[in-house]
Length: 168
Image 1 (cartoon, one colour):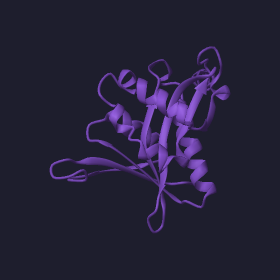
Image 2: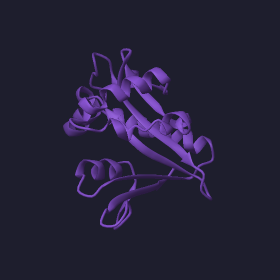
Image 3: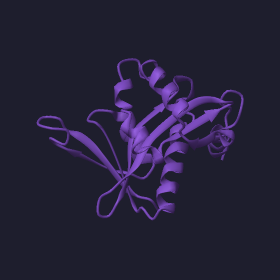
């Protein structure tokens, strides 16, 4: 019983002095996008800013989300609805401020994106990660995604792990 109570209490632990429940998630603005591209290399500890390609904000950005804690960006999700038949919700890029990791920010961003897709009638979701990214694998599986390694997914000799799940 104590483990269960401790687990429940940890879900509401403070982030910047506020609880997870007080995390604000909104549509990403141009100012948010500019801030994210300026800090992403620091957040990821290396060149990553180029992965936040402008089309994922300008042309596909209706699904882009930003999480704020006390007015500061705690994380973001660049996602969009891919115009396939049937359409799918695709999560392209997620970044969490280093001080906010392992505090449910990514989970909350995914949940909001999933809810938004479901409200639009989208029934399937997809994301990818490099093979060997055990953190991404654990995260996606914990959120109900199925994982499949696909050889040559990103070109010859460039396998990726493809994550899929339904919106409900």
